[in-house]
Length: 544
Image 1 (cartoon, rainbow, N blue to C red):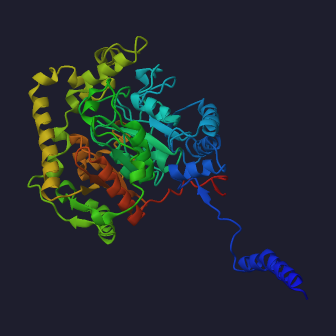
Image 2: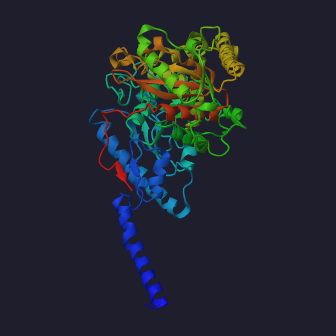
Image 3: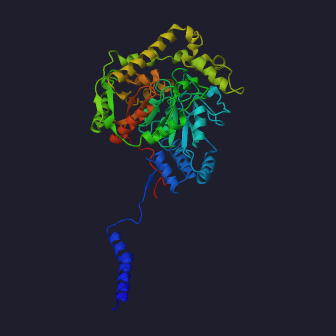
């Protein structure tokens, strides 16, 4: 054989080996032709939704249909969670337009084409705002609330307006409420919390990717805790309240509820920003997200954080024992992940009582003036010119006492009761921040309230969605009353499958650090699970 023939034969043998023998060896070892990714609507974060859309395995239109299927199956049928008041009839059309835009121009933000739901105190142009009170007349605003405008600009789709506890009326979920009580998806015998009961229950049932709630004295935090969710209240002044049915000029805040820290970070990136219509947002100048906060919570690292425990702000009643055990287990999760825990941090006062709304809550003095500002924003077609006119025409007996009483109060700057509480609010805020500074802490952690109360113990239809009996077990007035940032996180479940939440509390405008602490806890503890009565539907899980 000549040298040239020998080399030719050797080359042919090499080609044969590469073509047949090497792939055969790989297949024998079970190596896949290419990696597969599993998409699961039940657990998908906004990042995972975007990855599936980018890969061509999902679209915003299909995503909207998946969520509408869940609402159809579980909101008014099946377990009848009863959280949705108004569906957006244009949601599918918006999704198709955003899909087309994504293909030609790319996505505007991580929220591009992502369906969200908002509490029915938040104005969405063209959709009624009921405030959970039929006599309000369900006006249809011509303008979006400031945060809705920001979310839409980021590409989000408002899928639905979801229920709020009766905002004005004295009968709770009774005759004056548009749809009646919302159920807790984890145990329908128990309350989902309020007044953001709709966002809470809809997120637990995964009727949308993320939601918007509001808070004055626990209205966002309780539903987050009772529905095993992540609920963020950013520092007062980071998020505009313009276009939201108010209760307090001082205490009101809007915030995201979702199923992961990443998702609420994506939301706050879009929601935060200066708004000349809400001059509280002047305080946020210099503190708004610079670059995406969501991208800065991607690495869990608790080893660099010092966290204090404010046991003075937590209930010690025997009825709280099971929830307390779950809180202590969460502390152990933090320790195992490397966080340094300082337990307890002593303030020297009865912090739970002194930070409660009954001590420093100023909202009862502001309900009329805040309501008048909102009504003017609705324009000439508003159902009532003033709060006094609404109360007079509808009848004072239809309203909770705080609205009727406030009609006779002097202006806040002349009211000694208001001024005393306002001073107390600032004192508690200063105390908490001074303790964080004194012990060089990154955050405090507390058990937030206790377990959800039985719905039947809410004293019929006349009591608040949170439940009268829950008030005696509350330990979470600090964030609502002071304007400090706080984030609710799942801590586990009782033997009756009732969610328990914890809350991390930070310094003013240290919101990014708070998100990082919460993300580290989330990844270390992995406590959240979905409710069983709203199980997956066909098509919600697939490989691509």
